[in-house]
Length: 57
Length: 298
Image 1 (cartoon, each protein chain N blue to C red):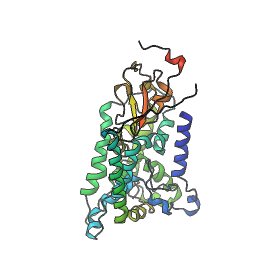
Image 2: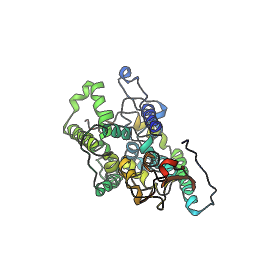
Image 3: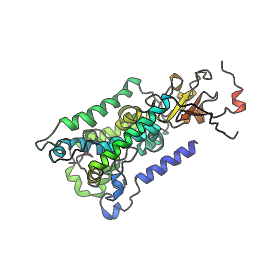
Image 4: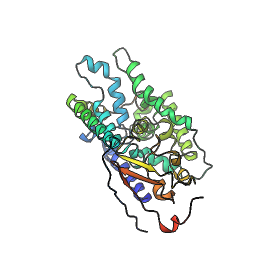
């Protein structure tokens, strides 16, 4: 049988609004991190072999 | 659907490890993609890795928090926590089931024929201990003379780092053999234990030790994508549990902390239409196949 998916109508509830609030919160955190220069810090750490991190040295 | 998921896992693993110039350069990828956190567990010291491991990056930032603050850089991991939180808010633990290279490895190794054993539920809470202790507390509080902490989880636990970076780098840079000590053999032992455990049990690392899965699991009940359980249609036949790669008893409730949203329960297990999912509160209902729906619940 070919699977058909049904999308019933639904009303807005606080249950549906909470994930949206979380998304906004974490988007703000990402922008804050970018603004603070964390992207270059992440890059700086990731392009070097961390011998300590992998159990060598 | 199972074939589609396997292909997505393979493509994700290939994209996360797409730098195949390392045998010539004798080093790891250093391009701009390394500034992006991969959604799954993939060591950034792996010679082929194209992205950053979110756990490694988070530990590094926390370990260097004091010196950074002294230097006037208030880096507390907002970019990484924001990225993980955004993914979690959208789909919860779904990246574990669809994108994580180490998750794929565990599923493939578990196919090796052997007696199979269930993991005691109490052990599945250990990943939260690893998250709190090895990702946040120890890197922040145990510091050296220069106020730097260590990446405790990477250094002492992570079997993915040993497999993807430690072992390949030994072959790629033979001079590193001189630096091998007790710690490396300890980490090899951890890797060996987990590989044997992967044969015997379903996704042991994800369920017991993965701090990334622990972070995503906080969002399972509150994400845009959520599983739905219809208790009226459910017969408690345990077919969902038998097929679940995480050993979840779905009939005891949807969106449990270990659910990786692989949808095996929906597509390969439930014959009674008791399992579905919703996106942003809108249920997506898969109709029950007529022949199978004829089976009446006992």
